[in-house]
Image 1 (cartoon, rainbow, N blue to C red):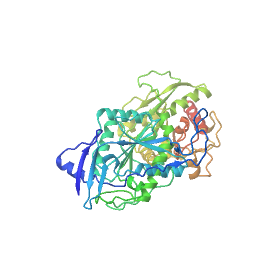
Image 2 (image 1 turned 90 degrees about the vertical axis):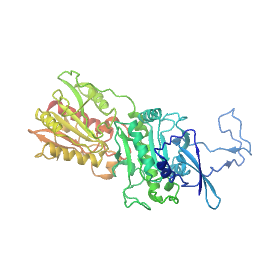
Image 3 (image 1 turned 30 degrees about the vertical axis):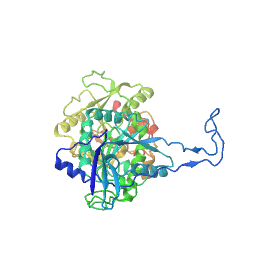
Image 4 (image 1 turned 45 degrees about the vertical axis):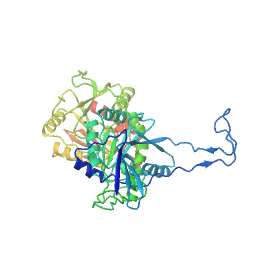
Length: 505
C-alpha cells in the first residue's frame, strides 16, 4: 500500500520523533466511507410563497430546500490528510479529523429520530470557529493521532466551555496517541478541573436508554462503558471517550486496524444518542451556570446575627450549582426576617478558621476525603453547636458513599438516621408534609411523597443533616434531566426551613 501525506493549513499535529511518527501513521487509515449527499427534493407544482409577500413564488421546476435544522455540533477540522493507494489500484482519501466521515451525521440523525427533533452539524477549523455556544453548543473532535493546540486555542476552548459550550472528543480507534494528547491538552486548559471517570449512574448513561453494559469486538475484555469528563458546575463540560464510538455510529466496525479498541455498533449507537441527548438536555443548565456569581471573603466581618452561607471546599468537585445558594438566600430575605449575607463563602476545614460560622454546607458529585486536620476542625465546629448540611449533587451514588464513609470517620459512634416527619425542621417556617421530586426520583420511588432527609443528633439537637437527593438543584430552579432531586418549590421551602432551624437551634 502506497501512502502519500499532505499537510492541512489548520493542522495541529505534532510528533516527538521519527519512530513515534511512524507508529502514529499506522493509525491514519480509512475507517468509513465518505458521507452521502443529502437527497434533493423538487416541488410537485405548488406556487406558494415560502415567505410572506412580496417574496417571489417558486416555479414548478425550481428545487426546494429542506429547512436547515438548528446546529448542535461543530466538527473540528484538524491535522493531516493522506492518500492511500491499495494493491487493487483503489485510492482513498483520509484525514485526521474525519477518519469516519459519516460518524457525526449518522449519530445526529439517530438522535433526531429518538427525540423527534432534528439537529444539524457543520465542519470548521478552530481558526474560523465563532466560539459562540448559542450558535453551536458542542465542539466535536475525532481522531487517532496526536493532537496539539496552541496557547490561544486552549484559552478559546476554556472560554467557550465556561460560557456554556461542551467539548466532546472521540478517540475513534482507541489509539493511545489521540487519547493521551487530548487529555493533556485539556488539563492545560482546565488545571482546576481534574478528569473523572463518569459513574454508571450518571445521567449521561441513561438519557434515552440505559447503558451500563457494552461490548467491545476485540482487544478489550470488559463489559463496562468508559467515558471521562471534566465537570463544570453540575454538568460535564469536556467529555472524552477512550474507546472508539464513531464507526459504530456509522453502523460499522474498524476493519483496517488490528490494534483498534472500539464499541460494537449497538453499544456505540446507544452511548452516542445518550451523549447528544445530554448535550441538548443540559444546554440551558450550561448557559445559566455561566452567569457570574458573587463570593464572600474569608476575612469579611459579618454581624453576629447575620446568616452566612459557608460552603466547604474539598478535593472532589465541590462547587456543583452556580447560583443555587444565592437563590435560596434571596428566598430567605423574602419569606423571613433573617438578616442574610447574599454571598456564599468557601471555606476549607483544617486550613480556615470556622469560628465565625454556625452553618456549613457540603455538596459534591464524586469522591472526596477529609484529612486529619479537617476532621479535627469539623469536630470543633460541631462541638461549638454548629450545623453541617450535606447535599448530594444530582443524587449520585459515588458522593453518597463518600459522605457516609467520611461521617463515620468524623463521628465513629454516631449513626445517620431518618429525620421523622414530625421533626421541628419541617415546620419552622413552612409546614411540610409532602414534597415533589424530580421525575427521576418518581420513577425510582413512585410511592415517596414525604421529604427524605437523614441526620445525626449531637447533645440532643440535630446537627448534621444529609439529603441523598439534590436540594440545591431546586434552589437553582433549572431542569437537570435524570437528576435525583427535589422540584423547585419543595426545595426552596425545605431550604428556608433548614436555615431557620439552624438559626434557632
